[in-house]
Length: 353
Image (tube, rainbow, N blue to C red; front, side, top):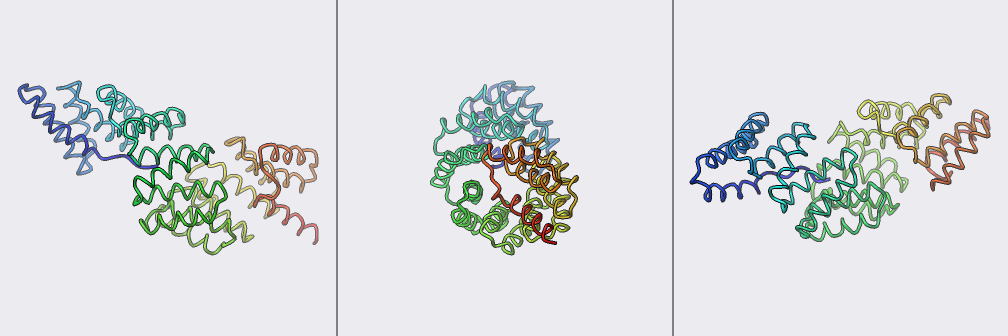
């Protein structure tokens, strides 16, 4: 999702405000502190910037630019609740501030307030339907929620408005992957990488498409690139671990999946993949423990039920296995998922020995 916008839009508004309100010393002081805060922000001095924005607000409590810029500073510092509060105030003072809606929507969506986040993106689109960022953000959010057709429609619109934005192409690549449209995903990720070779998400997205098309070596190379560019992204390790599983190299898979879970212990898919790795090492109890944890975090992971069903079948727990496989199918999964097929092949190989 697109990142925080700069505060330059407010610098233009601030300059106009200074001219209009120069007759009052308090407004002049507020503008001076706002300007100095902007200078500190440009230098990366967030604490000093916030201190000056505090003073600007103390002199002029109706300065929308001061609240907006302080919100950005607080967001960068990680004080998300305070940032939202400042965006609220900026929007109250300037209800047509698209950037405030976009940034507040990013925070809300990231904190699990998905409907509120999407509502902010909706409001940004209503104010300025030619803002590609708003269509991109809403498209990514809808894709994450599983509304794939609506997500593609939004991302198509974002690309029409800004075809040079690698992030939008990468996001549409991700949604195509979710649709199973691997050729379209490859085309979009290739376009993203042509525009920005340092876009780690595009390398990851292309790796997913290559993996699903059976190009395991190409997928590994892409996940390697993604990890080099962003070694703190848990899903990249999880995805590379899933390739090692398909190559039946469970120890290498475990290395990646342990790193993924060290970064993000709430990444359900990494627990599920690690369960498959333990199964490959005949560690059935550990496998089921990891499948259980994956389902605690994301109860509707259909293929994880199939994987746990196969693991329980290997333990001879037929009734529990049948219940898991039935739940898997109820949720739209099937025994043809990569993980389930792998587990069944492993079970058959052991039976043949």
